[in-house]
Structure formats: structure tokens, C-alpha cells
Image (cartoon, rainbow, N blue to C red; front, top):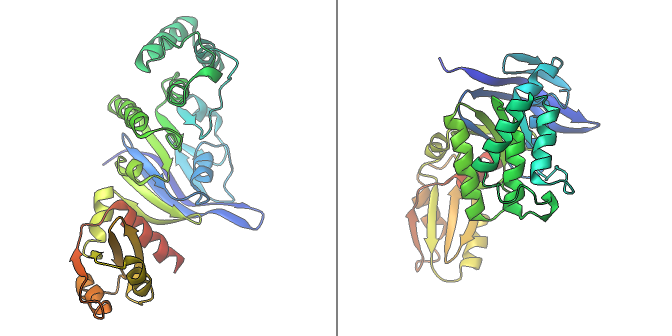
Length: 308
């Protein structure tokens, strides 16, 4: 059986009258990138903070690397790494000084500290920036420094909160290549994101909205579940046609993508193409064809279903 590195049962967190995470059940296997996909305010960061022991659940429980939470979080510190959404390292220290400071926090022996800093400067292409102040680095360089500092003590489990939300696509791609290098070396990762292309890189994902889990599985499994429910409409006056379609009970969502409408039909509909064609019988000039769903379609259908 696949080894589990983290599991939650009914994990809930309230802040006054607001429920940020609502009865969350997760099972995260070893050696994967597990994504928490959801919009801002969906509970991703709060869930991560409970899994790291930084927040205590209001209800429910979690187990991380064999450690039961809440409580008992102290032994986890040497076994996990947490890269926060914002850059939290000292801007008035150099790259080398930041890495040395983090190594000292983790109480690395002197020889290991020197070895790890040297390895990380090389691995994350920071050797030329070693004497630069962190505040003078570019966004991509700061991101690499943050990841290097997060893994300096060689943790078994990494928590990455929106790690590439502020960088360009090329930097994001390079960053993910480095993450998969860590996975190949045996590290497990929990990554929060609101970016669909980033979620598609994960081995498994859980879709969160309003603190609840709406769906989970591999991206391929989730896409397969909504197969046959997406059609594309082409024609003139798409804005008017889109508004008309949005008023039909059989239609879950309509979005314009360039010169096409992407239409998601309700789960109760057995033939999406026929349903949309019937809804547009007053517009014989349009064309309707089924298309393969993507992860954004899955997200829209899952979160709207949860809202209902």
C-alpha cells in the first residue's frame, strides 16, 4: 500500500463567526506533489498552517509524518519546510548571509552548514548573487533563494504556499523543474495555487472553495469525470448568444474564449451537444461541437456544484 505522509479528518478552523476550513478530509501519499487548488479565501493557506502546526484546528484532527495534531508540532520542525507566499527573508542581508542564518536556526553542524550552502548556491544558480543583498534580487532570484532556504535542512515534506504567483511563465517553468528534482530525491510536496496550469503539474489535487473540499483526484481523473459536458459554440454576436445561453436551466457556465464560447452543461444533461443546439434553435447560423474538458472546466463545475 502507498505510504501516507499527511491525513486530515474533519479538520475545521473558525475565526469568530467565519469558518475558513470546513470539515476537510485529505489523504496525501508519499513522494507526490499534492495541490490545493482554489481561489483566494478558499482556505488553502489556513489548511497549510494547520498541517504545519502553526494553527490549531477548531475541530477534527490531522496526522503529519506520523505526528498527531493538534499538539506535538515541535518534532515536525526539523522534518518539514514551509515556503510562504510572500518573500520573508532579510532584504538587508546578502544571499549567503540569509542562507547561513537559516542554517543556524536549524542548528546544522558547521561542516554540514558549509556543505549545504555551497550545494544550494550551485543548485539554485545563486553563486553569482551570493554577495548581493536580497533586496536587490529580481523576483525569480528571490524565489530561488526562498526555496533554497526552505530546503536547507533537507526536509521530508515541503509546504509551498502560492510559490509562483508573482513570477513570469518561464521562471515558473524553471521553478517547477527544480521541484520535480526534489520529488525525484524523495521529497513530498503540498502546493497551494489558484493557477490552473500549475495545478495540472501536480500528481493529485484537491479543489477547495469556501473552506470545503469540492473534489479530489489526479488531474486526469477529474477531467475524465466531466467528459461529455463541454461544448464549443462559434458564430456571430457571441456576447448576445452567451447571455441567452446563460439563462437556460441546462447550462452551468458560459465563457467567451477568443472567437468561441465555451459552454458547460449541467450534470443532469445526458447529451450536451443536443442541449446546446436546442437552446440555440433561433440561431441556425452558429456551429456547436463537443470539446475535451480541461481543469478549469472541472474547477467551475466542482465549485458551482458545491455552492448549490
